[in-house]
Image (cartoon, rainbow, N blue to C red; front, side, top):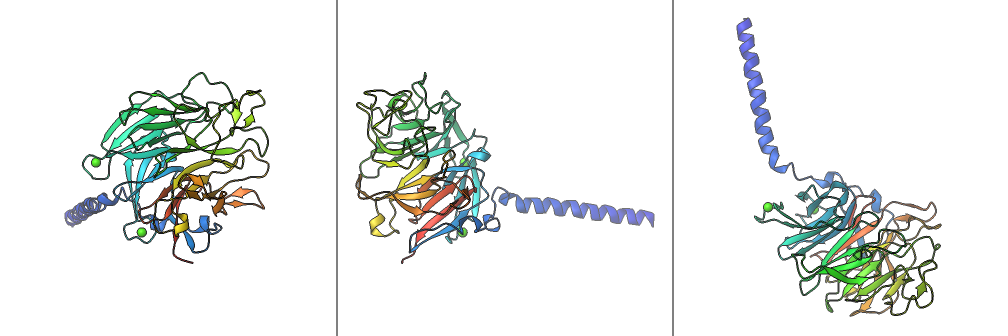
Length: 388
Ligand SMILES: [Ca+2]
Ligand SMILES: [Ca+2]
């Protein structure tokens, strides 16, 4: 009797162990993928307004400090998930406007902020330099990792934004170490340039850019455009943040001159703005313009084609908060055709001064929609046009 019950117990235990093993084998391939559908909530976008005919929906949520975003040739949206020290790839398999597959492309990266795809590899900006990642066998995971640059000065503004010019030269923007000061390292408050994706031939491309977080190449002219965050502690409205075309060898003024015309009270003086580049447009001070993207899609109305979108992260030190929105600059080629205008607003509650989200990165999808990352809400939004 005792013997029989012991045998039964062994059989049950063996059965349970085998079941657990088979269950694990069945589930294992899916463990790297999260079904985000179950995590999504529309709470963060219920207050956001877009122009008539457009709609905004939640593409992804539950991300940790998502910064810049970029579509890969595989159609996945790659995200520099800074708070998780990784790059994730998001795929909308059933094309319903929200993610249903998330895979980790690369992890154990030190606070990645930017990423750019060039010649079959991703180039990622981290505070200390640039890392090159490549998925050699096409399984969605980067097994090849090369630290291209690892000697950038850290501290102060610590985002490093990487981009490629049409001729294959690599550029990286590096912000200042301080609000306003004389830098000892010429790589600070500058855009650096390299001969190509191997990061050789480092030199300063443009200087005097306090914190040019956003870089984008104009699709027709090949010019490098940048958003620049102006200095603080000169009041609510001075100096502006700016949008620039960044050209080789030019000086954009910081710390002596702001926005092409404003002499700094501490570092400026007569003649401080002589020879300093003027912005394409000036932006309300403390808006904190970050990501920018030229609209190269087809699904928005024709008047939007070739226009520029800019994400304003929003102010941290202004008496009345500003920013927290996505704006549009209508362009004819590279000439503004009008003023900056609001495109997506409502992350800032103007009565309480509280923000529900902070736009950071922008990307135009293969579907022509505009994708917006939000590092406060941990979300990515999709803005599409369906007709008025
Ligand atoms: Ca989907
Ligand atoms: Ca791989």
